[in-house]
Amino acid sequence: MSALENEVNKVMENAFEAFKIYKKVSAKKRSDFLRNIGEEIIKLGDELIETVITETNLPEARVRGELGRTVSQLTKFADLIDEGSWCEATIDVSDLEREPLPKPDIRKLLVPLGPIVVFGAGNFPLAFSVAGGDTASALAGGNPVIVKGHPAHPKTGLLVALAISKAVEKCGLPAGTFGFINDDGYKSGQLLVKHPNTKGVGFTGSLNGGMALVKLAAEREDPIPVFAEMGSINPVVILEEALKEDCADIAAKLVASVNLGAGQFCTNPGLVITGKTAGYSGFVEALTKEVEATGGAQMFSTSVLRNYTLNSNKMFSYSEVTILAQGTKETGSENVPPVIASVSASDFIQNPRLHQEVFGPFSLLVVCDNKKELLAVVNSLKGQLTATVYASETELPKNEELIDAILEKCGRLLLNGVPTGVEVCAAMQHGGPFPAASDSRFTSVGVGAIKRFVRPVAFQDFPEHLLPMELQNRNPLKIWRVVNNTLTKESIE
Ligand code: NAP
Image 1 (cartoon, rainbow, N blue to C red):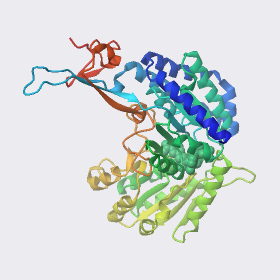
Image 2 (cartoon, helix red, strand yellow; image 1 turned 180 degrees about the vertical axis):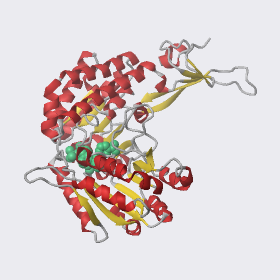
Image 3 (tube, rainbow, N blue to C red; image 1 turned 60 degrees about the vertical axis):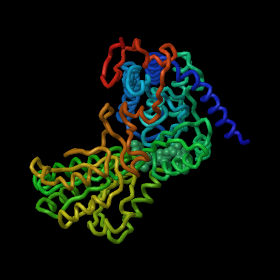
Image 4 (spheres, rainbow, N blue to C red; image 1 turned 60 degrees about the horizontal axis):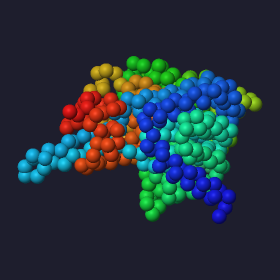
């Protein structure tokens, strides 16, 4: 057995043992643990900020913002557990007098799956990484977590992992509640997914990576769920009146969004769809002006830069694609300027390679001859994390068929905005029909993400003292529950 196999086995055995204890700790202890992780991460101070900047080239303001988001995600999950209703405690008390058969006492709630393996994305060294949303939601649900560190930021990963381990110790939890494997290569991740003690996987990253893990998990003797949040081209559809009224404003917002963080966002607007109508030439003019005035930013790793160069060059090599505008690259700078290319609707529909994500500051403008073609472009798209519609107030209701078609394709539909900037809140949906995510029923951002790592269990005719606290008559946790079809915070008489 190789050293790596030994390491994976040890981590997974520890997680298995920890699960027996961690799944039973009180909600209060679990929420304290999440808050403690946040505190330990904050204590890392400037050392963490500097390490992230050195490893990823991200600007300080962005890193500090991401740190704030990471800690606030942990707090939000802690608040969720304290409030308690997330576990959907549902109580149907017995009716022994019922005819022709007595009704049994049945009580259901959500319980943790078991050890969860988390793969973070390279482009979010904190908020989608070691202590990111996947880890926070899995721990909140009562599952031990094992993180496979991302090679783009190994030192950052290690610092955060040590902070989590400190919180584990401080809260008196078993050491195996959290595990970390810092590895450059696919082997450890594959061993973790295949390990019999692994009960679920959270993944944020590329389509290829996500699908490789989905396949691996499905081929196990006991298949396990993989919640893979993968890439997306986030179409932006601009309708006629909006284009005529606001072309300069829309162009400015779009270019800023395409260029944000060197385009290294899963919500980057990689596709713009519009018609050759009254505002079109003004829009192209404004778009060109904005792009040409933009210098770009440095990408977070050489491998992301390599992939961007490869994939954007591939796009430019198709004869039907024309480069409309590109930003200026200053001599000596490693910044990557934005590029907007264009293609006709019919060519776009016919060539599926034009539908692929180019991860970076790139967007493809699809030009339609009429509304029918615009609808056909939307119908040709695969699943997306987001879609955006620019429309005037009056034209939105006039385009119901188009809006319905767009809604079929995405997890979040925006009106007159840009898709970058994902709010962490209860109503957020960050996921979408395949291939944006492997399971469109769930979100990876916001407290709803906890639902991925839990499953419902029903107890029939159990005595009070053997039931989980959430299901006991006396409701000691004072949480909202459904008792005989009625939402209540009261105890049962
Ligand atoms: P990535 O290349 O897929 O890597 C993510 C992690 O998965 C890494 O740890 C990587 O291991 C591992 N991995 C990839 N392929 C694997 C395989 N075949 N077997 C085992 N492990 C594998 O993604 P990335 O480059 O870091 O991130 C950029 C991508 O993520 C973009 O496409 C972007 O759109 C997407 N993204 C999506 C979201 C979302 O919420 N949907 C958010 C952010 C980013 P290694 O250690 O070997 O690299």
